[in-house]
Image (cartoon, rainbow, N blue to C red; front, top):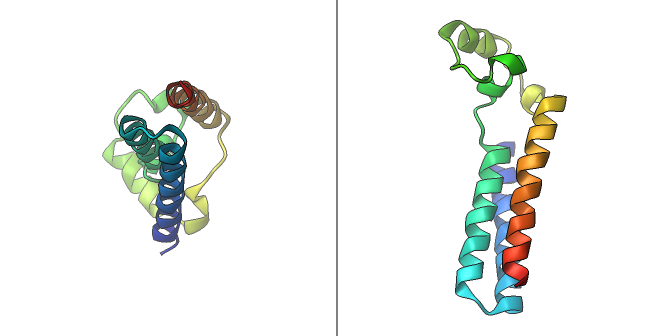
Length: 109
């Protein structure tokens, strides 16, 4: 139930940002781009395949094997949702930072 509440509050926050962008720019195109970027960012943070990323960084380039999926399922516990891994933080920070920068440049012009 916590995941649904988090998703709901994120979508409400996105709706508020879209209203602000519409009032500021009066552009439907920029509002739609804001929606697309926002949904992509929310989906990338809240809905990833955590079993895929919850393994060694060197294994990210390969599909999840049946053994890895079974091991991940057996050790599944609710607090393990947001583990802190330096490579994950660097990757997310780089991708999302660039996406937000490009969105801001687009909306502010």
